[in-house]
Length: 293
Ligand SMILES: Cc1cc2nc3c(=O)[nH]c(=O)nc-3n(C[C@H](O)[C@H](O)[C@H](O)COP(=O)(O)O)c2cc1C
View 1 (cartoon, rainbow, N blue to C red):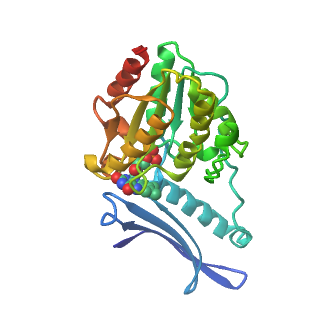
View 2 (view 1 turned 135 degrees about the vertical axis):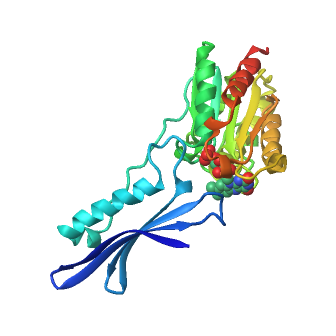
């Protein structure tokens, strides 16, 4: 149900009459607590432009939420209405993309932050892992598959001719880092019961590591693997597929799996930082894995 929050009375400019309104809509029947805000600019009965935002867009680490974002847009448009209307017709400039450097060198710990959502729950998990590893004096690299250049595997099997992939991209530095590290931590959300697409692309490309190792008869290092996963829905069954996917990946590249940590019910909880004892548990799992030979 829609609820009107703010309304600006009709303003006439150059013979045209506009009105501005902001509305709140309860979408709790879709996801628990979800609220959508709309800021609408009307010219008589015609909708000129609309800005929409919902409470699920905002990651736990963001300093404001949907209501404040909508209010900011409302205030800005209100000011524009009183001044220059041209901005509504010119369109919005494109955002600068955020990029992260691919991994390089030989870190002790590699963390794959598998969520495309910056500042979300996997990002928080990755920061706990990196913090703990650094506290223990280890070198850490965090890899963000969704910000990197990773071509999906095309199944050409040419890596079994030469030991290298036909694609030269950011995997060129990720594969050696993973091969040499002591601990690989995969932090992934559950997307349609499995891992997000960018993360899956990264995992599939490790086929070339399997190819080069088996062709060279290169011994496997004693790398340990730790899976940390978050799901929106409640129940252990939501991690069945992710466990199998990551399990298959660990076994393909000869990584010994640690006991995974699964965090369910995030559609309701939203922010893993409010879960009592979770940070200590994650840090403990990292410490325990690093103690093993
Ligand atoms: C495209 C998409 C698909 C999702 N699919 C599932 C799913 O199949 N099962 C589930 O329990 N949660 C699902 N979720 C919810 C996410 O696992 C949950 O919001 C998680 O906290 C996101 O992690 P992040 O905070 O690190 O981005 C999905 C979310 C998105 C955006």
